[in-house]
Length: 371
Image (cartoon, rainbow, N blue to C red; front, side, top):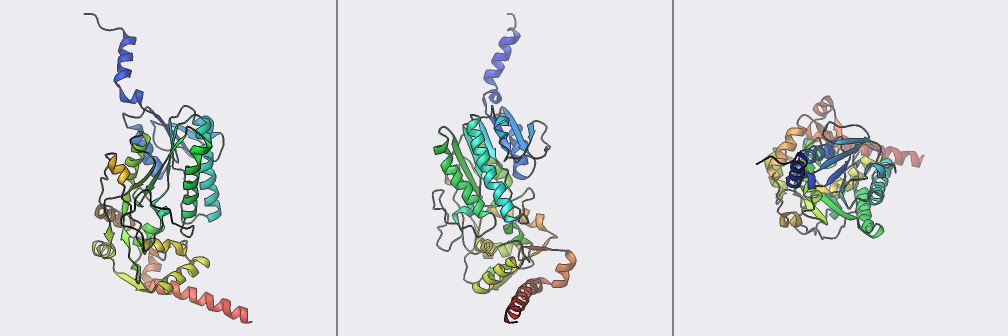
């Protein structure tokens, strides 16, 4: 029997190769962080036809098709043409970024990507916010369902931006019929160099515990987040998705596993000091960040679980990796100290010094007003 014509063989290979049937996926923020990890993962997947990578600089994934631009540039619409799915990960949640500039980038960037995706004929956009949008409140259920009310306020770092992105996600399908928007909300994100107020909490010489609070810690490894995002890209699940390790750790378990002792302060002292320290520029974290170390905001992840997804990492494993990542760093009240500063200040002494500095500034201001 003669062998099939080469064109016939090629057609047969295309019909059996999953990648030829899979989606073309565009990833914003693809050069670093979660975006870089997801780009590599999708580029290596047999279920993905092609990856379009967009960022302000070129990343390391050679298999992706790169476009260098700011996501706020309307020209992005042309770069998205031909994509089936867009995963928007170009967000700035850096503690040191000017809040107004951060909001301008995050909100305008998301608006532009959603509008450009619709104009380019993209049928699905996947956004990534945080489980922080549920808010950390003493009456939160353990765990929260995806449909729980978003009760966060804009008082914590970047949460106001994330709430606005959530609003844009709800509005987009109405403004752009045919556009499907999926939102993924990870718990405390760890790995890949993630640096947040919540990861810095574990860089402190003592774990600040507010008297009368009920912390519950749930982590999400970046590898599990990328896996969940891939599930959304492949349309194995949609809607509003929460992602994290199964279950949670109580504060006492955190202290036992980490070996870091607590420093307990009354609520009024802790919150008041945090607000003053941020106001006078001694720390990058506003007082609102403290709530997320006081009250539970654990999520169930039921929609992903129902779709067959499971986290590969446990809370204990992620905490161990986090402690390894932050080893050697010294942070007090969200402010990074040099090794010499931390050694000189001592464990609780560093915190007392910062609290004292705030009190001194406050007294000086009162004295000037009296003069």
